[in-house]
Length: 258
Length: 134
Image 1 (spheres, rainbow over the protein chains, first blue to last red):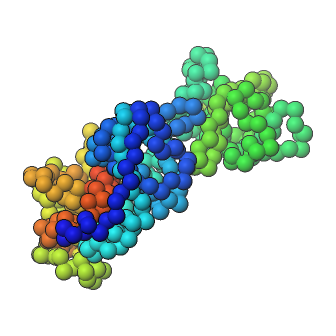
Image 2: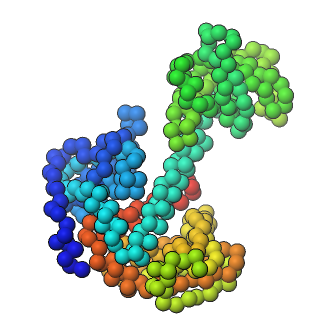
Image 3: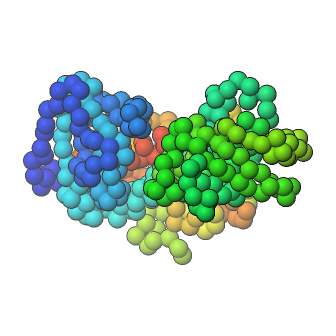
């Protein structure tokens, strides 16, 4: 049992200075790292923000997700040295052959742990995405104007047709209205809609839809926030009404009260 | 028998649980690993808002894998409850000592990796529960 150690070729060690980038989110690295000394900071990058995930210290391992997906997926987070650190770098290829040789019962258990971890990671991503859809977007709508707060917001799921202001009236992009208030709405669309037409903050769209009570509703809206959700494959926009006719305003008001 | 023969040789004892009975209780002491021989098991965790189900396990699935994370910890407490789901369940009590001996035979790197994965699973499960409860 002890001679297993002798079979392992020397393992690379590297030194990092405080602040050095070790793993870049989005890269296709395959190495697994063990901290010999120092500390590292794991964070996810979203836009220009860094969302801290964990700080790891001596003896801890990171980069292990490549072992789960065999390097087929990009690094899910970035890692920086939080202090001057020394790391051991393992090549997953050798680990894989060791993995194949380990006692069957242990392999059996570890395989199950891997499968459950992959499932749990997916679940966390799904819940996080759902939370953002449920709470963040309506919250952003609220930020647009204090006056909107007195309006009740209704959860809906309505097909709608829309087009950028200034585009041909023949153009019809499709989306789903997810919630509706007197001040605005939340619109979910396919990210490919944004390939040919800008879908950014400040963009204006003509929009029309059929309310569940069978009445037509038309309005001009302005995007307050747009968020791409790669896990769901959707682009989610918070919009406020910039132009609603009196008749359409009444139609909407009637629907919101019922 | 849905359970792998190579794992079945680690089964020390078979235990029968009637439908909806508790096999392992969260917070109780114990470091035995089990394998489900027959039936389905629901895994539940306690939260401030009551019990939530975090998964359903089937024949051949293991419970108690946390024992691999840090074998030296005495008085391990269970991090989740396992409950016979719907029908009766037959559980195999695994020879945990033998599994730990097998575990000791693997390379330090693989051991470290395995422990990291077991720890991540436990942390990620807790994170999912916390997120769902928010």
